[in-house]
Length: 452
Image (cartoon, rainbow, N blue to C red; front, side, top):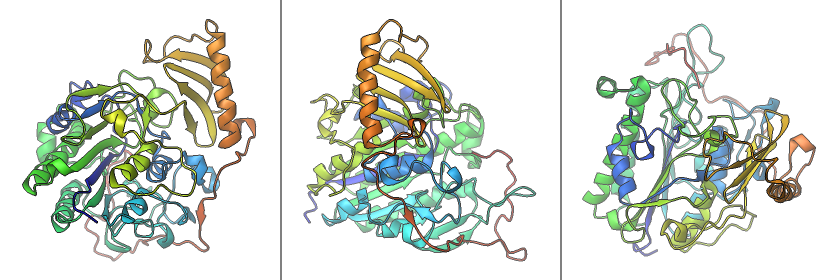
């Protein structure tokens, strides 16, 4: 594989909201490195994750598929995300971004949160990643004094737990160190680095220096730590002479909670909802010489588009399985419109809404039927229902919803979907860790009550 093939770095935050970066309007969080990244590339205003919660969102991003297509609509006991020791996870038969790029000789590594299954068969190293350093699920799924049902939080290296209950305030710095080592070790070959942040998911344990400088409490400190990490990675690319041959993408897995300092402004709703604030998140792409600087794109694009886009830039074949993502390189370069006829808003197995162009039709909320039409160009906050004024638009969007129900299914209407694949499943699952009262944990029981 020629070193001329571009490196790809995908940085994904946890619960970072649409309005949490300076370049997206924040007045309280300090993000100079990300603001500079946006000025040197393209900032998308209408970028969507495929789900408003983390496990289905991440599985969709890795595979280029709507969550229901890969069996990630819901999990055992109707859970919306995967929990420690569950029997299900991302099916090993699915093709991930890492598997696609390995076909072209890329070195591949994930640093941070995985959350697509913690059983051995579902770990990143079984899905195309050469190595892994991080937490296999959310940082709130840890033992807590007096109330936690969870085992100790496992920090993993590849397929081995190397520490239990790690110091979360120090973890982002450890992650960045690992990223830098990986970049240096692979400077002479193409590499794919997936850096999946712990921040800004609750509970937030932030380094003291960021807390001291924050204008937005612990949340602002966590955002600043994320921004610092981006600055380190960008500086390292320049030091290694790789800056002009590296595509860097920054985004978040779903919208912010809306409390504890997070912001989805000016969007309505947040994490877990199918209002815009649940799925529309920041996305910045930077690739000097290939993506013109200073662009702001309002084209509809999604995280499912990363897989086919990365396949194109690496000259790798697409998966044989059906995917939903589209190549958006030309969109990022300002040379083409969105390739999407429609975008579908699923909350678990419920098809809540559809967007086509400027129009969004919302037909259910938390399992209750509704019929609300919004013009997202004129009314980004979804405040004025135009369904009665635009019956023809409503009818057109209802037809698109029927197409999705036939293809992907919809629990609300009892449609199973014709083109969905099974989730991965193992027999006799076991948690990665078990609490031992006499074990010398660094932090035996975390003390913050806030959980995500």
